[in-house]
Image 1 (cartoon, rainbow, N blue to C red):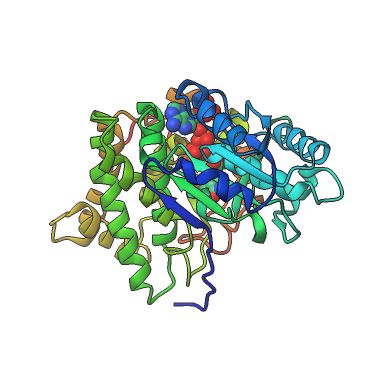
Image 2 (image 1 turned 30 degrees about the vertical axis):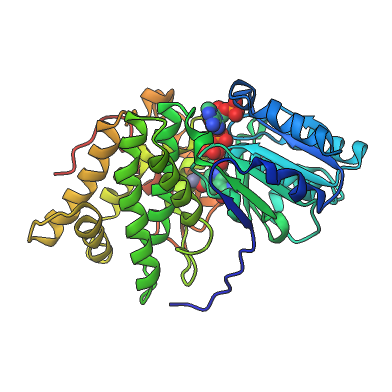
Length: 395
Ligand code: NZQ
Ligand code: ZN
C-alpha cells in the first residue's frame, strides 16, 4: 500500500425528513443562496417548492440557475459565475445528480478565477478559494457529493474533462434515499453501473497490499448487485435505495482508492464517448467494462480478475482463466438481463467513424499509457470500442 492522506470533511446528513435542517446549514455561510438544479425533476417531485418555501420562511434570499444538462456544459458554468458575482452569492445549494453538483463545484471556484472557466477546466486542477457548496443529492451514482472532483463538457470542442479542486469538497450533503424513488429505470441502471465502475476502476490495480480497500470494494459491489434489481422492481423500496445511495458515496470518497495509483481506464474511454455523442455516462461504462476486462485478461491481470469472479460473483470453476472469463460474463449478463443496452449502436453511436479520434483523446486526457492496470495505446482503445459495436460472449 502506498502513502496517502485521507481528509474528507463533508458533513453528511443521511436519511429522510431532514430538510428542516437546511436553513440553519445555509445560514452558517450567509443569506444569498444560489439554487442550482437540472431539467425539472425537482419541480416535478415538489422538492423545488419545499426548498423555496423553507428558504423564504427563514429569511434566506434565493437566486436560481436551472436547466443544467446531464454531462454539464461550460455554458452553464459561465452563467452561474455571472449570477454569483451579480447577486453576491454566499453559498451555492446544488440540488440534483452529479451533473448539477459538478457544475456547481466549478462555478464555486470559477468565480475567483481570472480568465474563462474553460481555461480553468483545461488546467485540470484548481487550488484557489471557492464559494461554500451544500448539496441535496437526488441520484445515487457519482459520489461527487463527498469528493473533490467535477466533470465538465465543451461539446463544441468535443471535450469532456475532469477537474480536481481541493476546495470543491461540499461542506454539507443531504442524502435522502426517498428523493431517489422517482429515478427512472434507465437512470437507476446508469447510476448503479457508474457505482460499480468506480469500484472496479480502483479495484483492478497492480499496487500490492491493499486488502482493506479491496475487501471494501468487493462488499460495496455485492451491495449494488443485490440492491439494483430490487430498486428496479420496486422503485420506492427504501432500503434498496438507501444502500445504493450510501454505496455511491463510499465508492468514490477516497475510501477505496487511497493507497494506490491508477488510470481509470473505462472512465478515460467513456468520457470520449460522451464528449463526441453526449451519451449517459453510466451506460457507456456498462458497455465498455466487460469488453475492457476481456481485452486485458492476461497472465499479469489474471489473479485480480479471478479474485473478482470468485469473491463478487461466487464463481466456483477450478481453472483460473476459465473462472476469470466466467466473472466477466457474469458482469455482462447482469447488465444485459436488467435492461442495459449493451452495444454502442443502441445508444446512438452507429459505427467506428470517430473511434481513432476518440481513442487519441482518451490517451491524451488520461494516464492510460503509464498508470493503467494494463497499459493501453490508441490501437488497444480502438479495439475495445470495436468490440462494443456488437453483442459479446466471453466463454
Ligand atoms: O436534470 P433533471 O431534471 O434533474 O433530471 C436528471 C437527469 O436527466 C435525472 N434525475 C436526477 N435526479 C432525479 C432524476 N430524475 C428523477 N428523479 C430524480 N430524483 O437524471 C438524469 C441524469 O442526471 P445527471 O446528474 O446527469 O446524472 P449523474 O448523477 O449520473 O451525473 C453524471 C455526470 O457526473 C459525471 C459524469 O461524467 C457526468 O457528467 N461524473 C462525476 C464524477 C465526480 N464528480 O466525482 C465521477 C463520475 O465518474 C462521473 O464522471
Ligand atoms: Zn463515473
